[in-house]
Length: 475
Image (tube, rainbow, N blue to C red; front, side):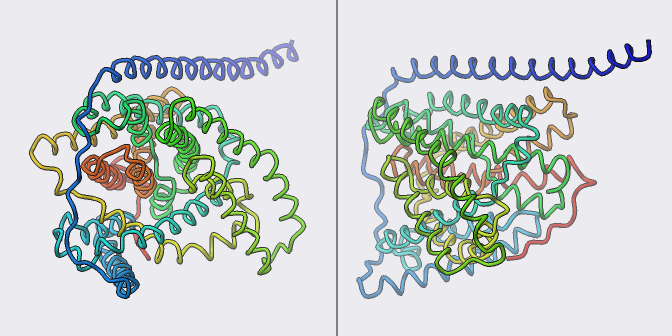
């Protein structure tokens, strides 16, 4: 009798676990199918909308820079944005904000939105924009490579079903809400040369982004990175970002070509991902295992940079942004290898302190808050912030509760997943380069990225007061 009862007790937990997994899978399937059905309805109605014709944007007339002075102005611009970023980062740190807030605001403050077109042109002349843009792209390329290197898939595998369900819920709801919001924004803030499908898909992706590196910095500063909530947030954010980048790759393909060509780009992208994961990753593991575990040689460093450039070139050739190739190469390199440790350590300060400020300055030059004229456009901006927050927070909260988390922890996780920061700016710049979004909408989305990131630390302090410590920001 004792053995029989023991076997019954052993079987019950197993059966309960199987039922829980089945319920999660069924719920996940319903969530996916429901989102697809809603998106199809939105698309069918959106194709009947008409956007205004494309008009010339306001020129940034100002100081004309000679070729001999371009290099000097680039140095001045970098110096100005680094110094301003350091000062503002220290100021925002007193309010518990991560340094990226001060750095982003520094780029906007030095741009035409606050200084005005003429005064801003003395610090950031329009003629240097292409050169500053090249430095910015290089900085973002190396930054995304570093993000890929720090991606740890181990915790994701251990919490696979709960992590994927929560992460994808935090993508699907804001994605659907963003696409629905596009119905109202497309006739007002888009142009007739942009298809509704491209516009709606991009709005969905832009609403779905979580800033994995900024999130990691917030958790580390609050000493929550090794707590259960911190690990769950990081694994969800990692899964979230990988999925969001894949969706953005599809959007880029659709925006740059017809639907058929866009599907071809998506198929080629999927094929490249499979090659990198199934073929390149095992080869890299063998090469790294046979190399010196303590120090990389000069030739090894050169080979990694060559691989980085080739991967970026490949994704650019396929038809998606080069940053996908950089991120993907970093993701397939084992995060605990000598390669990952060396490049993460040595790239950190060069990229975050020197190169990324060029990206913030470039973004600041393109952020034209002065184009937002009238109370109606500011109300639209407020609506974008509300929809972005409701989608990200609400989707995460609902999924976290359904997977067993208590209300407070689920709300804290939703707050963390609503962090956007630098990753959102990268996505927005891609959209502006492709002309999927207008400069006015770009400014609204930048303000949304700032607002959702700035609300994270204060809300987290209210939800988890016992976990928080005084934030100390060091640059």
